[in-house]
Length: 399
Image 1 (cartoon, rainbow, N blue to C red):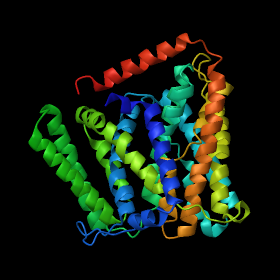
Image 2 (image 1 turned 90 degrees about the horizontal axis):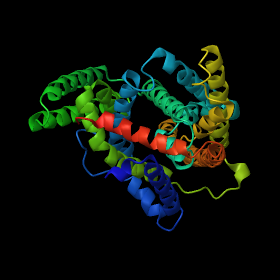
Image 3 (image 1 turned 45 degrees about the vertical axis):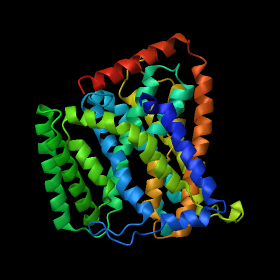
Image 4 (image 1 turned 90 degrees about the vertical axis):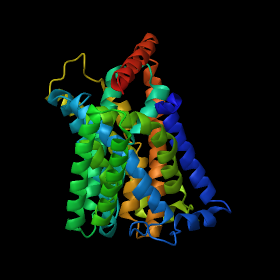
C-alpha cells in the first residue's frame, strides 16, 4: 500500500472524488444522492442523531484530524517547526495567508454572511504537496519545507477556529469527561510505548478514543477536535505507528469520501451574475488572498529575520508557495459546512466557490511551478527523491 502514501496519488484521489461527487449530483442520480446524504438512521447511536453526511464530517473526518495532529506534533518537536528560528518565517507567512483571504471575503459579502470568513483561510496539505510533487520536483527542498510548514500552521489555525467560532451551546460536564478520556488515552499510550504489540492495550486505547469522540461530539464542540486532542497527546512511538497504519485509509478512503460528499451539490440553474456574494468572495479570496498574504508576509519575514541568503526563498519560489497555498479544498469545505449548515443556498454556493477557487489555485500554481522548475538542473530531482526516502525511513524506523 506504499503507493497510496504518494502525495501525487493522494491529490489525484481527492480531485477525482470531488469531480465524481459534483458530476453525480448534477445527473438524474442527484436527488437520490442528496436524499441518502440527509438520511438519518432509524436509531440513535450513543444518543447521537446524525445524517449520513454528518457521520462522514463528524465521524470519519476525525481520523484525518487525528493523523494531522500527529504530523503537527512531529513537525513542532523534530521537523520543520522544531526551533523558533525555523518556525518564524512560515508562521508569519501563514498568518498573512489567513488575514488577507479573510479581509477580502469580509469586504465582498454583506454583514449577515460574515460568518463564512474562515472558509478561504485554509491550505490543503495533501493537495498542495501533491501538485508540488507532480510539477515541482526540481525545486530546492526549501520550497517544499516552507509549503509544508505553512500548511501545517494553517491547519493549526483552522483547528483553533473550529474550536472557538463553531462551538454551539457548551456542555461543561461532557467537556470535562472528554478531558478525562484524553488523559486516560495519554496514559495508555505511554504504557503501550513500553509494551509494543500488546493487543489488550490497543483495544483499550481504541475504546477510550471512541468515548472521547462521543463526549466531544455531545459537548457542543465540533467532533473533529477530539481527533486533534488524541493525536496531540499520543506518545511518539505509538503515534508514528498509528500514522503509518492509518495513512493509507485516510488518503484512500476518508478524504476521498469526504470530498465526494462535500462536493456533491447541484449547480444552481441561474446566471453567474445572480450567484450570491459568498461564491464570489471565496472564488477571489482563496487564490488572490493567499497569493497576496503569503507572498508579502513571507518576503517581509525573511527580510526582518535576516534569513541567510543561501536559505532564503527567491521571489519566484515564494510566489509558487503562495499560489499553491490557495488550494483550500478539504478544510475549506469543512469550514463551509460548519458556517452554512443551516442555510442550504449559501452552503451550495460556498461549496462551488471552494471548488472553483481551489481549481484556479491549482491551475495557476501548477503552471507557474512547472515553469519555475525548468530553471533548475534535473540532478536536483534525484537528490530530493533520496531525501524523501531517507525522511520516510527515519520516521518509520522501529515502528
